[in-house]
Image (tube, rainbow, N blue to C red):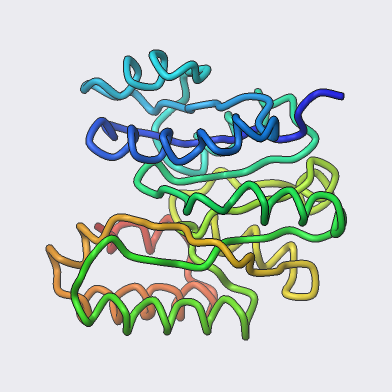
Length: 227
């Protein structure tokens, strides 16, 4: 039987982060879990494509925009299961055990990982705890937490939407909390934007954008306020 998992990574000028993300996939390759790694490139002008190609990943072209790139990657994937991962996120080494068990025992459920920021700041621990509570209690993990989903369920919920922002929120709401679990492995993601803008300022800005979206604001409108 072919390995069940297609890993899909949307990338745009991600040369500084992508090697770490790709390296974190090696345990899944060694375990025979990964069928293919697809990097959906949105027009990078740095070494992103070369890094992805040299790792053995399949590089496909996409118009820029994470929603578009996720859709393109999913359309190209051949696996029975899809693992969507941001280019600045690396998985903890125990992820294949957790993902393999999920695939074997919960075929009708999607999953995300526990969030961990690559930062020693105390604010990082505060925000991780806040985000992980949100994921458990509301079924709303961040896109940074990855998404593991069967092809069948992905198709059933309509997949990712080609929108300017909030594509991660839209798909987990379509999946619903009752069909989403948080795996006991970490998605270790970049803290660069929080360190640039300030942890609490950035966190509350993101929360405000999410609240506006849930109250009906369009992704296109909100994308103009996001940076």
